[in-house]
Length: 281
Ligand SMILES: Nc1ncnc2c1ncn2[C@@H]1O[C@H](COP(=O)(O)OP(=O)(O)O)[C@@H](O)[C@H]1O
Ligand SMILES: O=c1ccn([C@H]2C[C@H](O)[C@@H](COP(=O)(O)O)O2)c(=O)[nH]1
Image 1 (tube, rainbow, N blue to C red):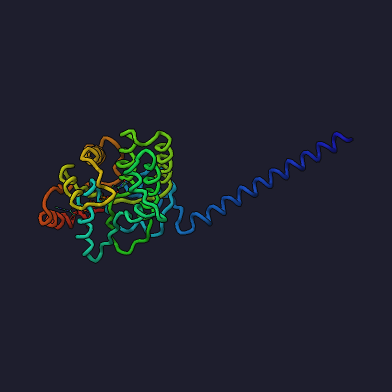
Image 2: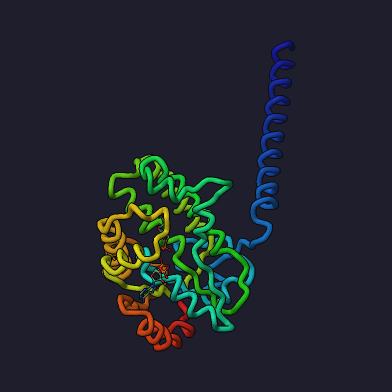
């Protein structure tokens, strides 16, 4: 009698634990959906978006409403290769919105300068800078479009494939920092739709970038040696030209960019149509 009473009580307790756990799990899901995903929509990319922009090995991704309709061009290239100057040129066109790199944020996050810290001590501050770069670049990619064509300086891809990779390969990023950043990056790429239609690669020699960098004279960059620009150059070449390192998310238009400014402006005009008609489909 006492035993069957105990068993009954045990069963009731188990049932209670089960229903409480299930309730709290469901609450967590709806809380998560409300809090994190409200501005966007989960869609089945296999059924709604069939272009090659979506071939990122995932069936369901977080997509901002309407973001799949605008054209996205990322301008990639070495430090001081002329990306900002190129964007400035295209910013004069009505239907193009230009998004420069959020470098002012990297130089001042709540009074701290992670860009300067990274150059002073890459092993200590590389993760800090690159985590913030990843966040701010993601924010750029997901910001609401104000024109039919968006031209962006760099991308979340080059932050990882060029700068994080360089820190790691040069022995300046500990394995654990690289692992954490890589898991963050992989999660983002697998779960969030980040469309890119065309990569414009401003291809320069490291020596020319070194001269332009010295002339621009950004205070954080005064200690950059030519070897650093050579390493960054090689990573760009392996990614975008040789295609031997990482997956390229869009077709690449290569514009040789060692030339003086008037010739570069002419080259931008020559390529204007190719750029504006790019649709990664
Ligand atoms: N074609 C060019 N010839 C000479 N100097 C250039 C050219 N394009 C840009 N510059 C100068 O080189 C420096 C770096 O250019 P910038 O557009 O800021 O490069 P990025 O944005 O790629 O770092 C700036 O001082 C800029 O005025
Ligand atoms: O992921 C990144 C992206 C950029 N940086 C550094 C490299 C340069 O010092 C600046 C960006 O300058 P640009 O002149 O626009 O190339 O930021 C980085 O360390 N990590």
